[in-house]
Length: 150
Image: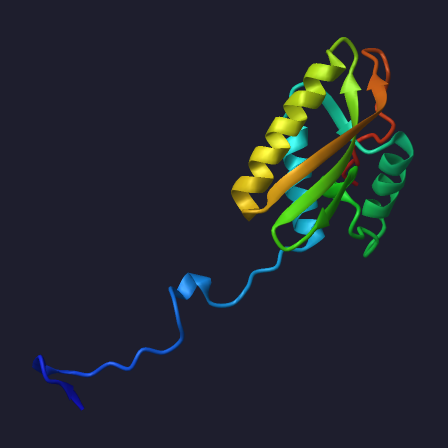
C-alpha cells in the first residue's frame, strides 16, 4: 500500500506512540542513589569519612570477610536514600576534619550531593539531612587501618 502523494515510497505503519525515549519506565534502586551521594560527599574538602565510627569498623571487618561486603559497605556507608518515582530524600552521616567549619562543610556536601544525584538520575532531591557523628583530630589514628598485602 503506497502513499498516493508519494507513489514510489512504501507506506510506513507507525507503531507505539511518542519518542522511543518515553516508552516504558526507568526505576533506580536506593543503592544506586546511595553510591552516587556517597562519592559526591567524599569529594568535599573537610569530609574525613562517612558513617559512625562503629559502622566504619564493622564495615572494614565485613569487607575483609569473603562474601561479607553486603550492601552497606564501601561508598554507600553512611548514606541512606529513599527513592520514589521522581524524587529522593537522603540521610548522610559524616565525620569532619578538625578545624573546618561544620556548617560550611555540610552546605558544600548538600550542594555536591544534590548536583550529582540530580544530574545522574534525573530525580529531584527534596532533602539532604546531614548528621555529623565525629570530628577527626589531627593526632588521631584512623579506626580502620588500610588492609596490608600478605
